Length: 42
Image 1 (cartoon, rainbow, N blue to C red):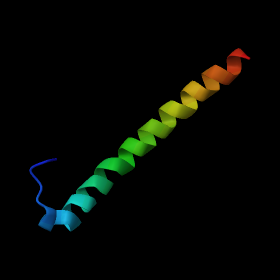
Image 2: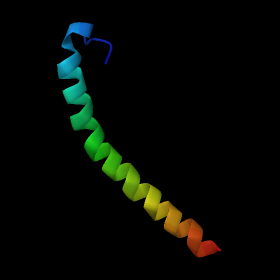
Image 3: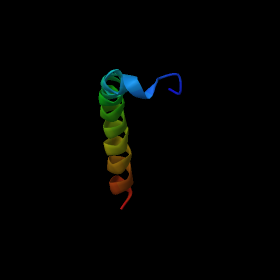
């Protein structure tokens, strides 16, 4: 991501958001899955 210049802040944030939304969804799914497994042990 270092090839982005400071002047491209808007494009960088747009790119980061479009990248983060699906990643956050997958991370949330994995987190809830592991949390369920962890709670099932107790």
